[in-house]
Image 1 (cartoon, rainbow, N blue to C red):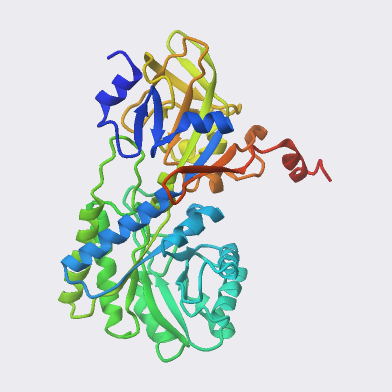
Image 2 (tube, rainbow, N blue to C red):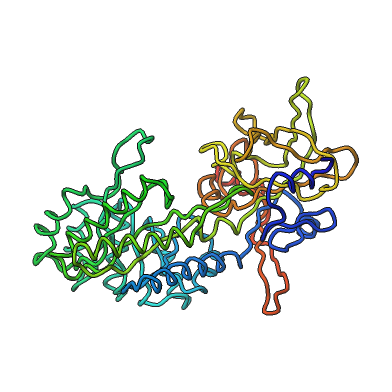
Length: 464
């Protein structure tokens, strides 16, 4: 094993659908990344829009196939979880693929209004409003309902939330209830802080909603932090939720929908294995079996995938500025940006990403540590999902080394603070959006330049 290519090929099944090598350089979804680097430079964030539609339609196909197989008499609705990425080009691309919207905050509602004004959505779109709601959020939701968005569904996170809608919404409206699920045993707390306790839901419906509220209970909502996984914990919690749906359905005829949340995993390692189709098949089979056992109609199913929708569309590309040997065995490659500011999950959650060299695939390789530009000791990356080490090509000549972190399209810019004040005032990298035209040819444009000092100084008060 001599070259970096040999290492990757012998460690993983490689090449893979979205990763190939041509002329010693990496292709990401058949995009020649070195061409993008030559055009725009680094550090660089990129979003590949076609991947969004690909994942949406794959999930829709899995659910429809399973429903047909099991003669499931219910509909499937794909919602996009906006908090995973609020960028307009992301939501526009998702809407091209006929998704609906799930919101988390008051400002999300302003995005919904903007999309409606542009003709991107109609008042028939489902707007599922989640989260513990401040007064402004409930106000904006009420405004949507009063403006004729009849499929806007506020999902009650606590029992007092209903009072605001009763006082401020004109006419009948649809409601959802979020169930407070038990967390995985490794969590430091037992029950989710979000939602209403299982043992309070039926009494709350009887006391506050049934024959007393203009809100019609349409949806029961379920989500667990681990997401959808083939574990005893997930199947146990899902089954418990469906039994509660059946109990409530018997006294609430208008209840006909469940939202099983998001949580499809994305590929964060070249060794990733997850049988999405089999998991969806088992979800549908289990829901139908429990409903048949309890003699109630099966519900319509909503999902609200966020990371799965946009995560695999994103990447960060860096240049190795220099290498530093700090002792006999620790060699550092210094990137031209920061992990703390660009990829906060890498240090906040110890998240591992697909890390690959962009060029020099025929070169020899060695073990390295990757360092960011901030002065924080946590600004580093030195292990991968499959290994406690990182290997990259050697830098032995004047040719620069470029590396990429892939499938980083969800959450990172919102957690890291897009366009604001970054640790050590490290500027946000430029952002390039990549698409394909009607002939399948690659197109790209610069969405935002690398952050300039003027914007930071103004935020800090120096430009006033």
